[in-house]
Structures are given as structure tokens and as C-alpha cells.
Image (cartoon, rainbow, N blue to C red):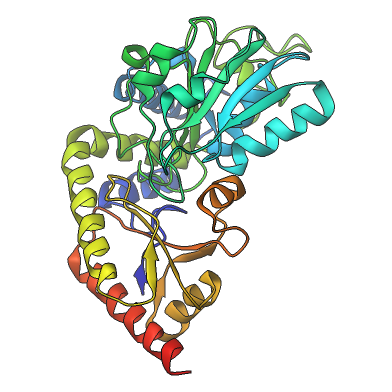
Length: 377
């Protein structure tokens, strides 16, 4: 199979990541729970991963790197653990349901309000987002890159336009590992990560990195291996936000993936930029298709056919050509409304930096054949 669904999860893990996971299966313990040598060794690896992520994303120290099972959980901690009744949030139409559904829940249950910034001529402009700030605005939550189009807002410009009191929360699910994200330099207060996409980890390791002025409350309660004498959660981070056993194998895989990104991010980003540009050029040659993306470093290429539904195209690619893509709404309904592709959605191909023009050619050839069949029927 030609796997072009990397925006959903990375389909090919580097050898170093595979080796790290295998090593945890040969010698594993529960980090932070016991005092024996193996548990302490595992704990040191977890701490090393925190330090690496803080370094990679210009964060605020290892103690402000909290591990989660995915980016969705990290965003839930950032939003549900921070917002109070009467607070207001600014977000955008390109957000994933991992942002929109928690905000909708808080609106229904906690009297939290939010406004959604629209696109301006297909672009997410910082000034459009900042214009929605009110006196009661607590935070602004934006994507690092759209999971539908690859559109990446200018976070530096956005931060400069926001009042200092407004916290900046970034959904890094698509951008992390592909785009240069520097929290301190940019003024990002919280960054949610998905390890299994651009950071090449296995599923089960996400993270929330946050600044000294960002102090989320626990939304999950239980054992932490620390302060076990009290029924209250520890007051210090990361323990305050990490109840239950961590996914040690996934965290070890995340550390290896982050090391790869640290050394090769710019090279891999350029590869994806060139690859999406090449595919856009090939798609333009096929009658009946419309591209909904520009060349981007996240490897995302979304498109539609004038006659065929997106999910039908995705199914035909899988069944007839053994090519994996994703059709539909991609858990981003407001993005599709903004693009005019709701409710049918789009076909999204998402490339890996380990792929090349051969995979793009195979996809373009299959799409041409599918289009020819639609024209003749």
C-alpha cells in the first residue's frame, strides 16, 4: 500500500523509534513509582524526553512538559483546566474538533464564550484573529497548521497583536516537527503536541508544554507516585496533571523522534514543501479536480472532484489502487464551511518526508483513471 494519510498518523516509523519501543519491551518498569534501579532508569528516560521537548520547542523547562496520551488530551487540559465562568476565547475556523468541542462544552456548561475568526481570501490573518479580542478574553487558541489545507498562521505576528494579558495556546498537532515553533521567542503560553505525526513517535504519547503564567488545574485525578499521603493532587507540575501510569514505550519513541526532528527538521520540511508543490502541478493537469492547498511543509494536499464525493474517491483509491488517503470532514467542520466544502468534505493526501515524487505520481495516475471513469459514466 502507498500510505498517504500521515496527517492522521505517521505510517512509517524510523528505525531508531522502532528500536526504542522494542527496548522497552525487553526491560520495562513503571517510571516514578518505585525506588528500584529499573524504575529509576525508566524515570530518567522520561525526564530526558521532557528536557528534549522543552529544548526543541524553546519551552519553559522540563517540569512544564506534561505527558498525555495525545494532542486532544493536551488541549483539553489547556482549555478545561484554565477557563472559568465569564471567560472569553478567540479561536479560528481552521481548528480541529479537539479545540472546538471542548469550547462548545464550556459554552454550554460553564458560561464560557468564544468567537471564531474567519478566513480572508482563503487566509487566516493575524489581524482578523486579534480583532475579536474583548476585555474578558482569557486566551486565544489557534492551530499551528490546518489539518485540512496545511495553512499555517503567522504566530509571531499574532502574538504581537494580542494584548499581553491574553494567553496564546497553540494546537501543534500538524505543525510540530514540520514547522519551527519556538515558545519563548514567539510568546506562546501553551503548546499541545501529538507525538505520532510529525514527531514520528508511536501512538500514545502527546504532551502539553506551558509557560510560568499558564497554570492549568487537573482534569484527571489519581495516583502520581508523589505525595501519596494526601487525597489532593500535588501542587507542583508535572505531577499535578499526570495521573496514572505514563505510556513509557510511547514516550521513549517520542524522544527518538524528537532527536530526529532536531537534526533534520529543515531538510524534511523542504522535502515536503517540494513534494506538495510537485503534486499540485500534477493535479492541475487532470480535468475535474480542484486543489484546496498551497505547497506546504506539513505535506498536506487536499482536493475535490467536480462530480465524485470525497469519500467515494478515497474508497476507490484504497480498493482499486491500494492508496491510503482520507475523505470527508477531517474532524474540522468549520474549516470546510469556510472553504465551501461542507458537508461533502475533501480528499486529503498527506505525504511523509520519507516519500517522494514516485508516490505523488502514483496518486496522480490513480486520480486520472478515476476521473476518466466518472466522465465516461
